Image 1 (cartoon, rainbow, N blue to C red):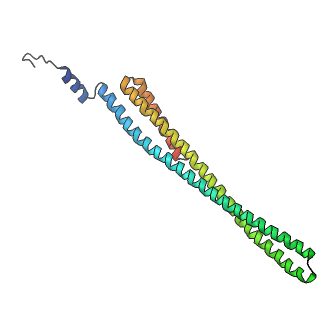
Image 2 (cartoon, rainbow, N blue to C red):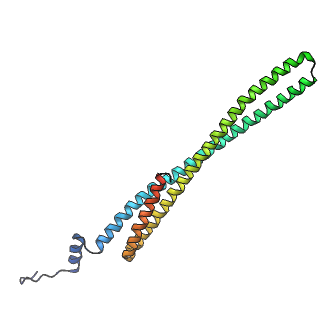
Image 3 (tube, one colour):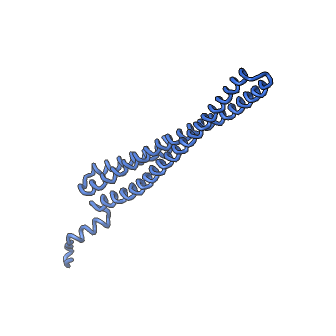
Length: 192
């Protein structure tokens, strides 16, 4: 600084003064960097949720298959009891009079056993259906989380392009894309 009130800044001094007062590209850079860090963190959480819901869907689908197999086994058992009952009904027609009471009791027993087996098989089928529905719900949530994660990844790419080009319209596109990704994430959290 000269003694006559004339002050000369170097190029570096001028940039430092603007940076400390929040002027110029530094504010733009800081804003985009902070937004990118937040979006990347939220995107990581959304990515985790996408993986977790996909794993849950697979587990529920597996449980549905197990219950369906158990129900099939019960229906096979029911069919075996029906075959035995049919043989007893045939035996009544062919057996001497003294044996008919025995075969009639066997028919009653098989009917009672079949009734219990049928109830159990239908219960297992209902459980299988419930697990299938739970799997579908988890897959729907998985797709929402994956969509939200994808939109946030696009947002991060827009942020990088905005930083490189210094285009304000890309900054607005970045904010809009980030809001869209967060909105889809809210839909996933609400199971919509």
